[in-house]
Image (spheres, rainbow, N blue to C red):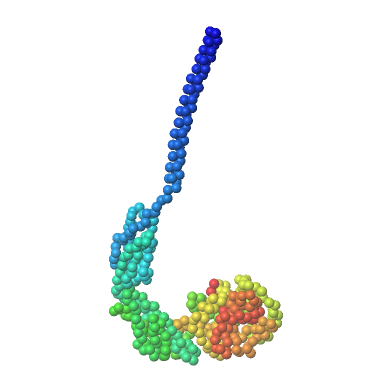
Amino acid sequence: MYAQSTMESGDHFKNGASLKSQKSKGNFLIWLFFAFTIVSTTTLMTSCEKVEDEDEVTVPIAVTDISLDKTTLTLVADNDYTLTATVLPANATDKTVTWTSSNTNVATVTQQGKVTAVTAGTVTITAEAGNKAATCEVTVPPVAVTGISLDKTSLTLFYITSLSLLESYTLTATLLPANASGNPITWTSSNKNVATIDQGKVAATGAGTVTITAIAGDKTATCVVTVSNDISQIKISDDINGFTINGVTWATRNVDAPGNFAAKPEDPGKLYQWNNKTAWPATGAVSGWVNADILASEWADENDPSPNGWRVPNLSEIRSLMQAYYFFITSPAGTYCVFKEAGYFTGLAIPLVAGRSSASGDDRSKWTYQLVLTWTSTVYPGSISAYFLSFFDFSKDLQREQHTNKNDGITIRSVRK
């Protein structure tokens, strides 16, 4: 029994030792559980705080006021001043300022607040931020005129009713100083039976002499206008360098043989089919006429019979020529059209020529109702025709928009390249 008791005692000791060990392990597990719980809870709380931070919405801070460094301002024309805007609160979310002028004819403003005076008057400059606004009243005082001048001090216009040549000219007035403002120009005519004046436009009404006066403030400028009904005063230009009308320089004679001009302004020169350098006489029978359709869409340089430095005109240049005054004169050499600008004694003469038929090359000298002046290099859209300048006798008018078969024989009046 002792042995058994000892053995049981030993067993008990082992069991006790095992229980103690197990108890220590249990305590460790309990401690580990609490530590894990604390860490997990802390982590979870931190995560929740982060989520709450991420979900937090920033509330915009609205503009509560805007003010300008000046509420009134006086600026002389052409001077400028940059206004300064202050937006409150200083930490407003959107402090963008938008600038506007109530009258940009008086003063303009940039989006940086720079105000520039233009002409005499009063204007309101407004600065806006959010739903708040501030204004500055800008006054631009008149700048006194110290002088006035006209682009012409003398002028000759023609008034010939038999030729429907009733000229007018618009005078240009210049004020000094350049920024003079608030001084409207008034115009007067000393004799409206000779010429009238309207906003600077002088219109001839009858032969004689008249003084046109421009007035600004207490300053004046005058132009003496002579109105003539004497056609002999108008000269025809024969300048080999050309004659300029409305910015386009025209040859003073028609093209004759390829590379050459006719001898005189009223000579017809040669006739040409479109985009073809073969020259045909203006009158008389011809052989070898080409009547096949000409399909080219442009007049090639190598087929242009104009002398060196010149070319066939285009439609826009014909239209420019038609903006000038024109009239018709008949002389022993034939009938020709004279183009001139108001205020000049010299004009450009282009003879009226019958031309040749596209089908056979027959001259149309018997067709007195339609005469030609010049080809253009412009094709009529979608066809085998091209534009030319012509004269219709029954309407006594030039027809700048006419187009005809490219096989017709027509004269060429070149323009400077």
